[in-house]
Length: 361
Image 1 (spheres, helix red, strand yellow):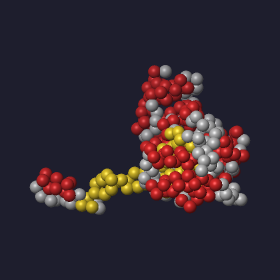
Image 2 (cartoon, rainbow, N blue to C red):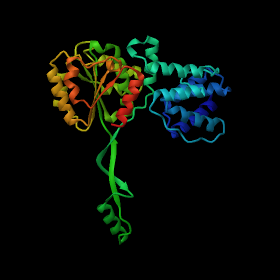
Image 3 (cartoon, rainbow, N blue to C red):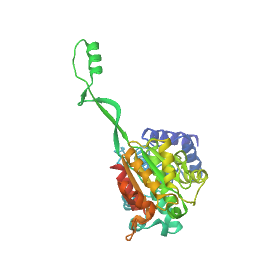
Image 4 (cartoon, helix red, strand yellow):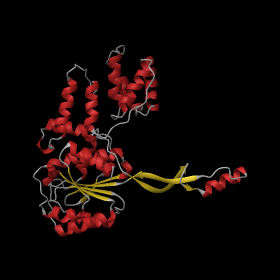
């Protein structure tokens, strides 16, 4: 066991150097798992390490390369960049026989998995069974939500751009002559997304899935995402969604939100938000069906204020995905003139499209 512990500790250090979160706790879990397995079987060691040392889907290609280099003697290759589309990611896994669960490829699982993913991708989450909804939520946890970038006030050195007088003069004083002109340019940073999730009774079939999508946004850009639940009151839930595990994050959110399945007073809540915070330069996303219990005129006025501050205002309505949908509710008619985009939010494909929209806003 001492030799095994030394070997696996060295493997964990190799993984950490490659960017995998194989910390001390995960390494101990691996050793406890190997205590019940045949360590002479390379397949069992592979799956034990993959299930205990990897934290996110991005860790899997790094783990495979490090395992091959550490135990198989092969040279590690270059990592592939992850895609935003969940369907493409899972279809590629199916074709190669790789999966996040423990199992073997029998030659028939690949087309079945790809077909199942494609079918669930366009299904309305309100009409799914519990098992199908759990599968969609698992696929949402793999979503790599991109983010549009904006120019910041900070500068960085560059080969071209604006002349950096301070660095040029500093180099001249150090060297005794102007040997090189220094330049600078503005750095960029991701645009902040402010997401309001309607948790009223009419949005109950979609609220959990929307919060899963919010968790994916927070996980990818924790410093550039703010999430609020909207019902009868405005509740900030960004801190609860920062937990790495989606189930734990949703449990924390459910304990924080006091007005589940109540009414919707979105106009009053937006007025409270704009009075306390600034939305300047952000991408404001409102996920609601537009059934407003308050005054629709107040909601329209507050969305107009929000549109003057925000870089873009996107309204996510789950019913927009239906072919016969018309924005006939009082809330939707009041806000429609001030929206940049009115998009669907009823399926995995709709959330993939919303993620792409946020990446190119």
